[in-house]
Image 1 (cartoon, rainbow, N blue to C red):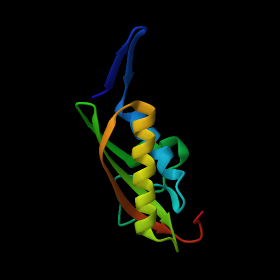
Image 2 (cartoon, rainbow, N blue to C red):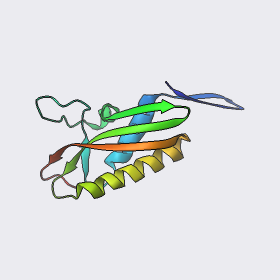
Image 3 (cartoon, rainbow, N blue to C red):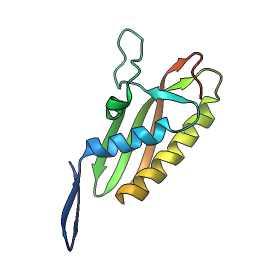
Length: 120
């Protein structure tokens, strides 16, 4: 389900994938986040996604211009996971609300793995 906005010049439609990509970019900009992980774990190993696949690590549910977002991330070893998750929640909520005009109800962060030697 896409989010649609109407104005005097026409109609704007945002797909869930666009919202997921915006959320993924915002999350990867946070300190301690090495990258996005696939939403599915195979054989107990999380797949680290490249920049072109950030939306695959995000689930978006839209209802009545309210978004619920779940992010699957990989954090760097030695970072405080609770602080990293808190920063991701704040950054993603602010970014989605300011760029799309959607109200964000929930941002859930699921840490899929820890990567050694790559904390920024």
